Length: 424
Ligand code: AMP
Ligand code: MG
Image (cartoon, rainbow, N blue to C red; front, side):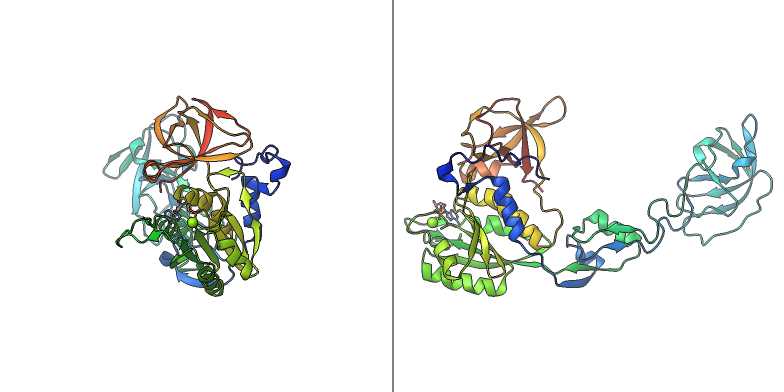
């Protein structure tokens, strides 16, 4: 779903900045260069949770496989419900869920005690719910006349054997797995996991737990991006650690990553400063960049390209910019690499609970949290920190990231907005 960002006309502010591209174009370019993995594996159904289906799947059987009762009650023949009620029936048998099928006499006013999920006996066409019956020994009195055919789930009414049920590229949600289980699939063929390398670049970075010398900061991006990707059942994250701002070191690790990963995500070092070596290292490997500068805040210097067949996503180092560019620009392309047909992101409607002035032509992404609900049920969103350049502490409070459209110059209280949830 991409309705929110699809405002490309006004996005590029000036001809002189023609290399600055709108967010929707940047995300689309990134998706266009990504190639889905092809290799597949067969997994037991439960082990395939969250994975990507390798092929289309057709139903093996009808669902339900046989006509069965939707209620606890009495199976009757509706032709015997004539004239004014109440109607009296003679109890002739009992059938519960799991019964392999029994046959009963079908002459006269006969009723069979039946339970939810039990096969409807041959010759019976209606189930009267027990709340509409009075029972006295073998006598059943129906006090409320049923509709003919009521309370029976017909064979194949949910799924017809042989028809398509799931398509290649679908993610195996619990509900889709339930459908496959209902069809008797014990195994499923899924695409192999995408191998995603992660590098934190920056000579100032120290891992949490280490001694923080003057001039150093702790590495926040590693855990943030790693833990985000760790929630993707279709991904295998390869943590390649911290690399200092050194061209030689970056050249070496980019080469290593391109031989073993489908995707490489880096943070930091993508701006135009003398200490930003990521692009130069990429050039060494004859990498091709398709996205260089994006009309977005934060995240303008984000880089997307290829090194050989490996998708490269160079995110800016500022943690907020890293997260926003990861979610908005890199992730759709990574999802395509995983073989997913839905590349996202998923936007939810909300309402501004703040006033904010912004630059025309630039898409801004701001951390938000819900502070109420409007009269049609939309969340009212508070903007956290100083909008698009917030602190780690403001980001930690965020429940979502709202997008402020490029064609807007101001956002006022009550304006409709879209946001992407950060809560899983
Ligand atoms: P850069 O994109 O390398 O210019 O970095 C922008 C800012 O983000 C600088 O202040 C960096 O110190 C900071 N930064 C870079 N990488 C990280 C990281 N992994 N964790 C926290 N802050 C970072
Ligand atoms: Mg840096």
